[in-house]
Image (cartoon, rainbow, N blue to C red):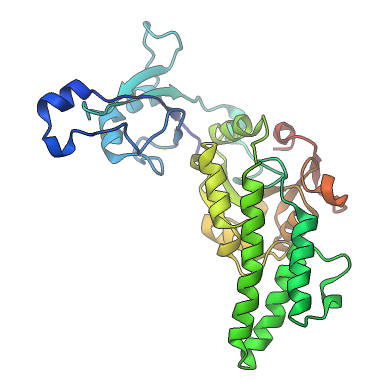
Length: 333
């Protein structure tokens, strides 16, 4: 298991406009703050030889001396916090300043039951905001107008069953030379799912403990990922908005799979991407669909009761871990 040896935090971006005015060509005098980083961005270093994902190569070369020093135990008396240094990149026209701090390896972090922890998004990392009833009603109307037998979707139908069963049916249409009809129907459904994703995104906020628990897990060497039934634009958009993207090695959304959870395809893809067996991975989700998908994949599951289950009233009856807050996750790891 790779343990994060140090953390890099972006603390300040600046523009030295006087130097730009004095020394740069007129065509590039309208320089702005470095767009590669944002204040508060965090990166975890698991090896002094491997640059963190999405980090700047120039900045990595500039601050690697300080990274090596911190990883190897350097501590300077003039800093308030032991094991901490401040460093910067050498783009002196638009410099960026970083806080580099050590993350000591503990005995607990070296002895873990799981190698990776995967999370659902809506209702798990952020509060549940998807308008299930309205979306299901709208999709049912589209399917009914298309002549679908609504009894095939179960009673009451779920947003996942509407998606998955329709794909099963339209696969048969394609074999009967009705590919255009199938494509038109699926496009109408995708538009509805995307629209309700975007609607939820306007209200989504991370739980108060989300960043803390992710930071702790990374610090203890866990590999993290997101596997969501929501669309790619919304999933990546909300993680980026709240500066959470860098925590995750993999991020899978609706467009990355042909079937939604509870179908196991997305979690199987996550295992393949991570090159891990299911017994080394824990999946945390807030719906029965999450737990069923994990069960079908053979991985352990943790049911978070503060998300979708509060809307649907459905909870996990399988023999899985149950928590009511993300902060409780540490108790079962």
